[in-house]
Image (tube, rainbow, N blue to C red):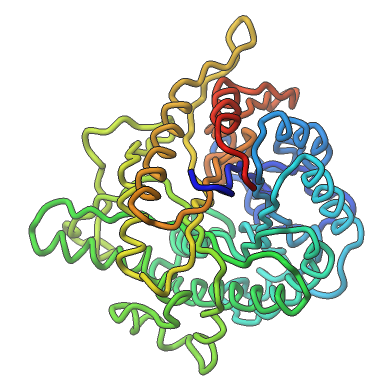
Length: 441
């Protein structure tokens, strides 16, 4: 990898912090969603999660042992502003202040995400991301965090995966807040993109020094056949899932096919707000998507089909590292001069391997996964694509949203009963790989 390449791990507040009501933290939509029951595997909650809020010094020590040069984490909005508005909760900001100092002492560049899906419930009660005022409230929150942490954080992501927050939270109801609006969820996408823009403006206005980017979920769309109907369906889903966010952020417009969905919510000044200059473009990748034309009386104009002939993770995701290579090349081909340097801000795999009788977690499948995906990144770097980092999801086994604790993505095994941490063999492998890289940070 090139000099200064960011080898990192990633976590997020709700999946790992726990302490859901400690030190003045307000209720989030995920607290409400999980406590209601029925929305998460085994009715799990993040009330305790991995207890990172209290055990962060131990986790930071593991990062120092791992030898990464960067770590991505998120700030919990309701921990900083319990009701999503008004003055900061001092205890919440104090926690992140200590965490930032600890991470710096462990040799990490810091990538802070301001919104990783834990909207304060009080704002959801006012309409959540269907209410454009939520974007303005987010800008105020971003300013508070930027003023406190902006002298030390090196990279900022205002909003994590607005596409997933829209479609899973407001479209199909699999994530909090559990709305089922189908394609009528697009106002939430627009307001999340406005929050991205408002957050970028607020961070820069607050004096925060770090680079400002994004972290959007993207996937290559593979038509099920050469039939015109399948190709057309794949192009439509590509516009919805990929181009909605890239074109809004990089070009200041929405794809032409989606104009009828967006024209009722876009107001003058919205698109220039969304199109803020980006210092890096973050790509979160999971797997390619195979798309066919809908059959029968389908509710949607496309159908998601299995990707055939590939091994899958425990979560059922096909493992296709060359699709990450395809995606990075596609981004360069589509956006060229408009595209800032790329960072792979999230990539990971679920394998449930636990400790053997000797206490060793032999997760060879995870080693193979990250080796092959890092090789895909190295290949496109050699082809001239400007990729500057790779963040493995996740440092710790944690609460995996709708899957609860049924999926394990961590390089570190967490016993969810005792909260004891055990580095896996993938942890040792990643440490050795990083140690072999030239350090020219």
